[in-house]
Image (cartoon, rainbow, N blue to C red; front, side):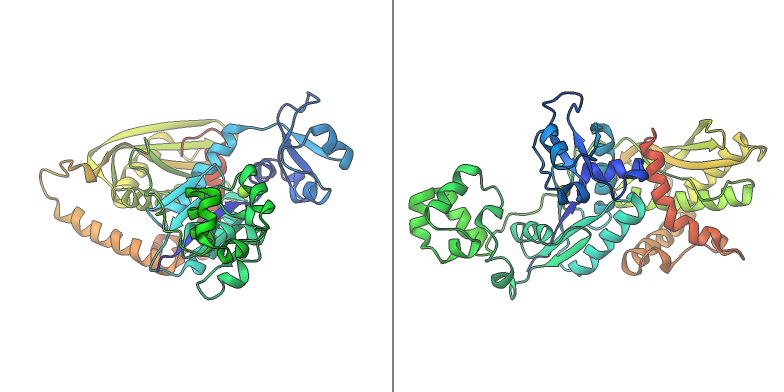
Length: 412
Ligand SMILES: [Mg+2]
């Protein structure tokens, strides 16, 4: 039996806006197309706005009537696309079969693993690293997984199993099944097929007569017989670089703190490159000081690598070269660029390097430990320090900060 997740970012546009403007949190907000115009429509709304009865697709002026204190925010597509990509990067760590459905929804095939546990892990990470919440459905097919993600909002997981689907799914309205358009919906209702259960209880042949091929599909969906696969992450995904950056809670004033952070960043970048079967030929260091001045330094590597050891050696050299610890830093970033895909039969190395292959075994073992037991299961000795602030600060906040940095104009 398959294990499929459907993950849906709650109030996606509105949630992203709240990440950038935390003062909006908890308030009735609506992201509206051209709010200056009377005819602008509501593209997304917060839970508080939803409570006032505001609906997606309605005119701004009627929304304002329902809720005079409504805060109207113009949409910023670029931000949403970036968050969407950051979310997909997280999904990619759990499966190589991730199929997006719009900007804010994706299916993941995690067959053979504990779907509930992965769902909870995704939710935790979305909140911690991106500041948004997810509703995740876990089931044995895509259609039920999607229904599951609609069941509880926000920040919830619903599991639909072969044992409970009749009780959980069948009472749901027929129109909640995937791909039912308005016309089909009205016809279903006209025939008294109001719930998903009604569709299963109908005679499949009459469904076929009434709805043609769609009737067969409807029946299969309702009966839990959807066998559509989750698409693999597109191999044409045009990834130019893999990077990570962080803005810790404290300013970075010396080489030892900066070095520790670089190790952390390099570990995560290398892990992601291995996951995506990439090796990089260049390493870029990005620094931003407390005056928000930022600059980058780049170096070419002797051979393409996906090892943190190589990245951190380069990043530390670049740091020494470009920063005299004379001014405090607010953010640091590392990026591997000029990527090659090792699945394309690229020549890996002309001379085998025994040291590098031992390092590769070590780092891949670390990947496996992280995948099985979480990021905290194994970390570098250099991170162990009396005050523990990095240990606590970096793995937790690094990505949140990272992604904020990415959003504020960095390629991540
Ligand atoms: Mg959504």
